[in-house]
Image (cartoon, one colour):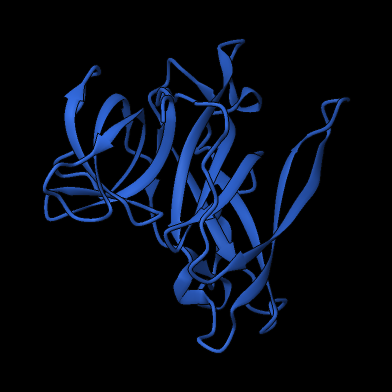
Length: 223
């Protein structure tokens, strides 16, 4: 399989994909070192089953390595002052579940000359969520790094990849849970409006990252 996009974890120095495959890196055509990374997004080619390896072990050639921002989902009931979460625009481009995580491709505005760090969080709405449906808000604090705060035409839009542990939020008795995510972004007239998307989390399920390989370059500092 060529041009394969994969999300996975580094465990004891080994790359285990979200669908349970163990990848043995025999060739690498890109810069970067996966050692020390927690979650990893890769593009590469599955060359063959590893000779003498485990049943689920494959030799791979890596063409691209990227470490997404990995952080915990916040619970709204634990937040007494949400000012720090911010209310700046953020757009959810796509999302998928794999390996017990929810993975998000997001877009934000940033000033490439400022070097300011942006705060992006996924917040579970504890008041609205039920045992069958979980509601979330994608929140962005640009920390003043916006056109409205003096970007002077240097504001750009960048995409980035984030990943959040998700399985712990789903009751043990549930095999499926509906998920709804809200965010705020600009409409065609430049006004900020709320949008949403929904999907189903299936315990033990796996969704492919993307049929089309996507690459990222961290242009804005995310935390």
